[in-house]
Image (tube, rainbow, N blue to C red; front, side, top):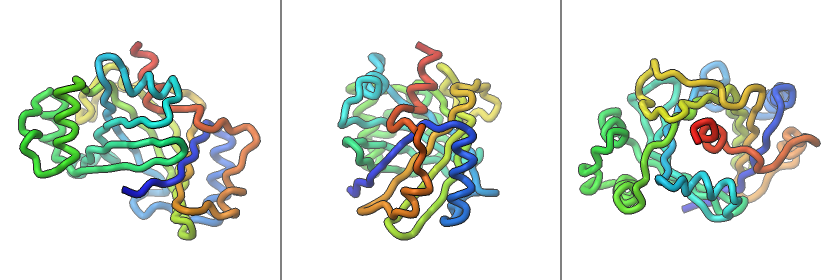
Length: 224
């Protein structure tokens, strides 16, 4: 399991436009993006006691969360993901699941997961059985990703963050979501062993707030 350095900043729309222009001059867009961006829909999980949410709010250094995610409305490619955070380092484990399997998970039909050949699916089954982990809310947003080879750097700009409140029917394209953070954008920077100076300079902002924003937390607050 390889951990990567991660920085996350809450920025303004004007900051985002400035960084976008800098990144276009020095980095490449993600090959999976269309016109430089894609739409992300995620369904986040939590316990009845909101363990993941509370750990984020308390600043717990070592934490994890589960989510199901797909891109640009394409339900033929859905990932179950486990995001692990240890201080300023992070990593992600993922497993492909079908739309039918995702729908079963949302409905709470989990018995099939116990016999899965995939370890991550079995782990989610255990969490749903023992810790009563359940789908909590839909999180939608637009992402503009950039790739820079040296340091294996990935810079993303996320905005138009929307919440499904307490809705979990994330495979339903007609599911209504509402704005969760008007005017706010998220800058994320991830790298392996070193962050090149040219990238550090390109994303530097005097007003940025490090680790001050969680899309999941922001999308849960209206529902609490």
